[in-house]
Image (cartoon, rainbow, N blue to C red):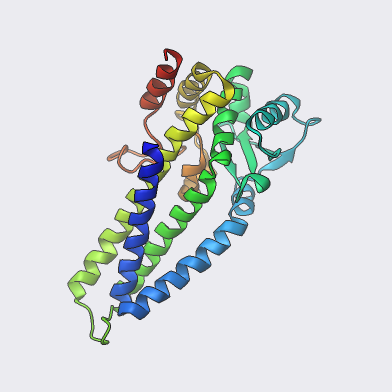
Length: 281
């Protein structure tokens, strides 16, 4: 419940930030303009984001004949969760990772790298796919797509406000210093909010996945193993398209500095601690 409330508050915050930039651009008319852009971008993301991301990663669809163990695990978990059978994809990459995509449970897909299939036991892989199907069941894909789209739109509008200037309701130019601050700070604020939403949804998917598989220890073990194996193994597509990092079960980007603040995922240690706490209840 706390994670759901946190997500709702963060979504409200990123929407308010978006509308505020629209108002800076042109008062009430600028706000309407910003809203129109947001609606158009979210419409495109809602219908086409799954196809785009699967194409980015050169994912190829598999069935029970071509990937029997992987496909069977997904099918059994989907049936247990009461979900329609999602499309199942493999990605030919050594880096161990997995994600879910699709606009709703009826149009969902799950994908895993060949690296994660080699690295994990069947029990651990079951925990990972339960996590991904929990994302599908809770419609996290839609939430993350909207938040990522809004963050991108905020960056675009902030740059527009900087280069073309803003206007108030009466057409007077906005303060240029304010415009500069908006250009610099608004995209950072939007990214921080987006990443906070992603982290909240990861905790919820861990919990839901552990309950679905009935084996919190398996998911905890899988997360530790993925983190260990992934060190030093790049995922080139994620590096070229960092906006897709939030979809993965483990952050595929290698960054330093303010890592926790700007991370799309909670720390593995905290995730494992929460999962193991479920075992002793």
